[in-house]
Amino acid sequence: MDQKKIAKLIKSLLHEIEENSGREGLKKTPERVARSFEKIFGGYDKYPHELMTKFDGESYDEMIICRNIDFYSTCEHHLQPFFGQVFIGYIPDGKIIGISKLPRIVEIFSRRLQNQERLTMQIADTLNNMLRPRGVGVIIKGRHFCMMARGVEKQNSLMTTSACRGLFKNNAKTRSEFLKLIE
Image (tube, rainbow, N blue to C red; front, side, top):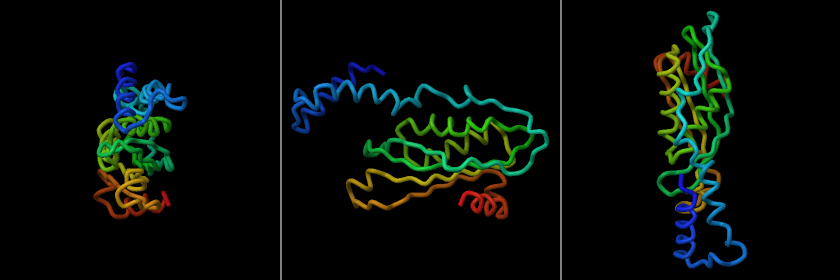
């Protein structure tokens, strides 16, 4: 990311909305925004396969769940934040991954311009393709600033998306167990 170019664009944007980029509170805003973009959009130069560490599952064949994984992302339609929690479950087929890898996968994909539906599928597909478990379930509950601050202006709306693969999709009992355990 070219921070100088981003700062210049932000200064131009401030001018376009009829703000004075030279006033006290805004003098360093273009540079601050450019630096913040390094974190906000830091998922573009990271790839899940580079961090995935698989371990022998020692015959463990029950559901593994990581819940309440906080995420922050940016809506690709309005460039507004959306945020919430991710719930991930999988049933291993010989291999497991380190539990910290699940939030890291969420972080990689959420730190890109996104929509919640794609984010949900990317997490599920990545785990399914890299780990080859018997099943994967991903649920995301998100609050969208674009819906809160503009348009319909509904402050308490919560969007829920899910992506299920393998047993989580094809077995109602497995799906039901997952949903019960993440409550």
